[in-house]
Amino acid sequence: MTRRIIVFLDYQNVYRRARDTFHQLSAPSPSGQIDPMKLGRLLVSRNPGRDLAEVRVYRGQPDSTRDPKGYGANFRQCAVWKRDGVTVNTRTLRYPAGYPGEPAEEKGIDVILAVDFVTMAQRGEYEVGILMSTDTDLKPALEEVAGLNGNRNPRCEVAAWSAPGMHARRLSISGTRVWCHWLGPDDYKQVADQTDFTVES
Image 1: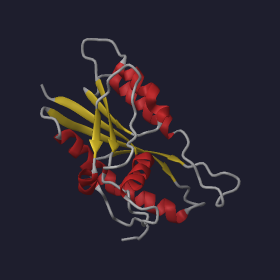
Image 2: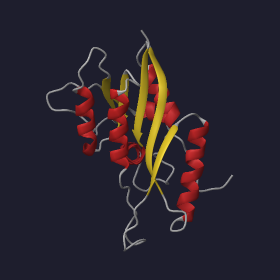
Image 3: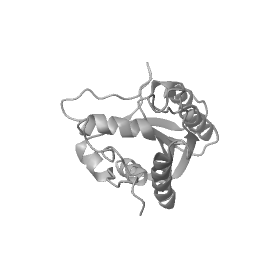
Image 4: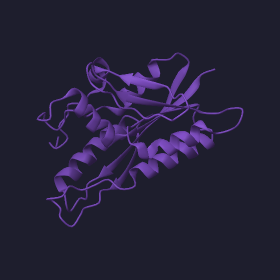
């Protein structure tokens, strides 16, 4: 039986961990960007009998008045993803009183992702949900899906970047085996996106 797979990406976390793992700190900003659909297809291709039902991205969105350049880049990048069939979920960034000296922050993204990961499992919308993030705030969602009862339990898996000689981080559940798709340098090269979305086409 073919299993429906949904890939859930905590995009800013995925991007930052890619930069930390595969690039120098001084690398230009496109370094670390990935193509979500390519990443989803790569993850699904590793196991026979799996069908990529959906790739879902969760990310913050700059405010158009406070950061018009960032908003434009974000808008263009999300437009490309949507054109490719990715489901994009955004929430406006929170700007502290000290902005721009203090950076804007994502707020509520992990909550939206966690709710979708659990409710979509409860509704039977996927047989396997692959969550890519190292944010420990998402562990309760993993635990909830792993603990669902029933004859057709969905399976939860995680994905994480890994490079030789580096300590790799991943989400896990104490006392429960959760499969991790480790993605190395060659995998990253297959899904990396060097497009500079700050430049209007």
